[in-house]
Length: 250
Image 1 (spheres, rainbow, N blue to C red):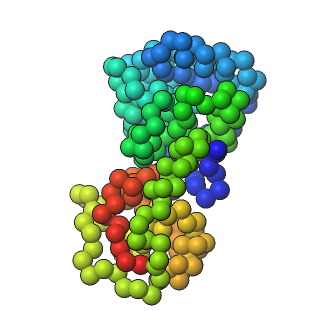
Image 2 (tube, rainbow, N blue to C red; image 1 turned 90 degrees about the horizontal axis):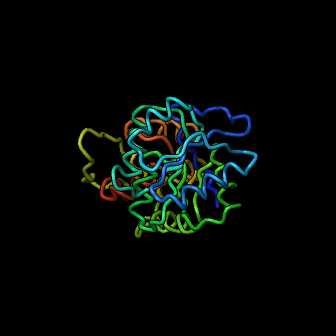
């Protein structure tokens, strides 16, 4: 399944234009057999061409500078440097590259950590070849690639207990929850963040809070800036990791 409807993927640093096929890809995975299989799958496709494949990520940034790929596929667990650390390096460099984590890990903490770090997708290694190619095509078009298992984990996180019954007329809690150091959110931004974590789009958030769609967009942009995130999906993941920060009565 590819999420696209109400979720905007990594966009702070701009989207590269959809590349003329084949799109250049760099693959990083410490399992030789799996890595070779992915390389062959991509090279056999008309849409992708593997510019480099690496056993570990020590030289990844230099490789990215040399080949200027459109897409990087990262294994999550590698001995020298993890895929998450490599993902953070790419985002810290503000490189305009799509990054998809391909892993065997089904732990929800790994999923949310990857998404909150700026991944454009999180796919399992047992994904069917045709489905993987379709997912990666979607990522190049600006979508977020997720398997059904990952979608289920997100849906479970969105359905936070006690947050389903709310009304814009209810006052805020008198004592607002504390936020991580240096982050200052207004009451409306906290409300908006809570509703984003429940999977509501801007129109539904506006209806819940009794404000305009345009005002909701302003709050979303402010949240992305203040939390240093890139997408609604990352905002939802952030709430999952900091549930006490938005436990408001709406």
